[in-house]
Amino acid sequence: MFAAVQLGRGEARAGALALVCALGVAACALAAERLAERPNVLLLTIDCLRADRLGCYGYQRPTSPGLDLLARQGVLFEDCVGQSGWTSPGLVSVLTGLYPEVTGIRGRQSVPPAGLPALPRLFRMAGYDVPNLSYLTSLQNYWNLGYEPPREELMRPEEDRHVVDFLERPHGKPFFAWYHYRFLHLPYDPPEPWRSQFLRVKPGPSVALDAVRREVLLARGAVTFTPAERQTVDDLYDANVRRMDAYLSSIFAALDRTGLTSSTVVAVTADHGEELFERGFVGHASTSFAGTLHREILHLPLLVRAPGRLPAGRRIAGLCGQIDLAPTLLALAGVETAPGLFQGVSLLPMVRGEVADAHPVYFSSTTHAGYQTPDSEQLAGWDAATTRRWRLLARAPGGEAQLYDRASDPGETAPVKRPAERRQLEEMLARHHAVCRSLAATFAATGPAAPVMTSGPAPRIAKPDRAVLDFDSTGGRIEVRLEAAGSGPLVAEYEIGTGTYRTVGTMPLAGETSQFGPFSRELWRTLALWNPWRFRVARKSARPQWGPWREFRVEP
Image 1 (cartoon, rainbow, N blue to C red):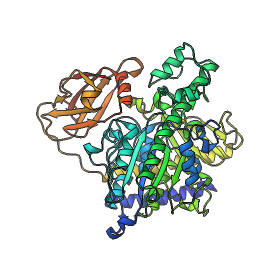
Image 2: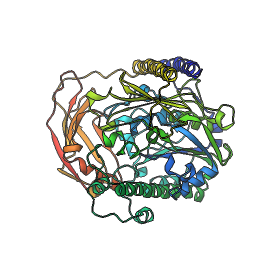
Image 3: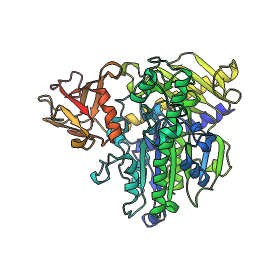
Image 4: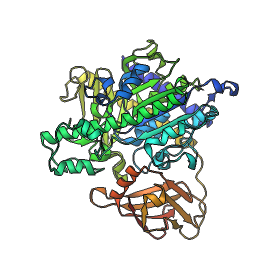
């Protein structure tokens, strides 16, 4: 029954989306004279945040007083399913309402196709102010989403003040603002006072704990943990959640202080969850090099507060997903879009009790190593199909599948043999991939034509022009500037890091000048783990002529 419903919706939505994309228009109507009546929209996403580590989702430790209050003031969705096991595809699905198979985000070099129905673009078309606040928008995974280059006066490396500073500025019209926090990501090294609040036992010398507190990447099996060390890892993660909650609480206080609370829709969610020894290790695809799609990765928090538009204290038990957030936020803002523009749907009918689930089934996918996945391995990984009762996990492409009963085995520890249900979900997963391939091809066909390349010498790298880049002199930014670039698409080849951090590949460049950051001081310190940085540039072609290598180091 649920197969027919879901696939019927999916195919109808695919047809409507194809029509919209062919026209090159994301229909978005909002009368200018009514703009002042529209609410602001503030979207806050958090790296590696598990729903089950928040008090409002039943956790017993006091990790989230700020988010618990937000839940009491708005709507909490109890069963929100993530669409990926690592950051970029999950966040792009949040911003576009489309599955990763459509947005095309498979690895670090992936660039979304032009014209996606992304929140920044649609809100700007509706007359909203759309500030570029996030360092992520400089990475190619987040190009083509409608963001303009960042305004210098809005860019700060101090993450705890970044959104607060923006809120305290004067606002002449409604805004859509998005910011992504990464404080829960490895390494787990919370500062005081949060560390002392949550460490139950003072740890002694430990190779495993030193790695957890120091490393951004920790390959599965690189270290082993004793039971006591596992408890300490849990404590460190909880302390980071409490730290994150304190930053979010400062944002909520700023909304109160500036009088913006009643006129601002606030949504909080995550890009993906985090394994904390459910499968014997810690992390997620991009850190452990062994991605999975079990509950600890896919069960995401989703809280939405909209005074006067949503009831307070409502808990919604039905199934929903990351792809539903974009259409929901647009609906709350009164921004009308073309029917079928998204693969997700507005969650407002669920809030009103008109439907039990937003969709009867949701799909998820991940590569094995997320952002660290080599270009040659981007088709391998895991796919998942999730209903209220079942979760199917299948090795991609076309590998063996296992079925889990979410009702009797919420931790997904033992696959079950239910041939009919398994076969039905496998068929739905295959149909899902077919629909997504069709949509992805439509976006690719309607994108801008590639610029004509010109001959000439290989581009030269003018910046970075120093062998060492430090935080204070750069302001937390890495600027790349080329000379003699000419016209045509540009590509960079990079070789960075050693050992576990060794990363090689190619990536497109936005033009003769590209800026990455500003990064917070904390994040800047993690960049040093990838030293040395080495890259060269060419015009994109079948046989690129590369310029000379440029090497530098990042130092705190």
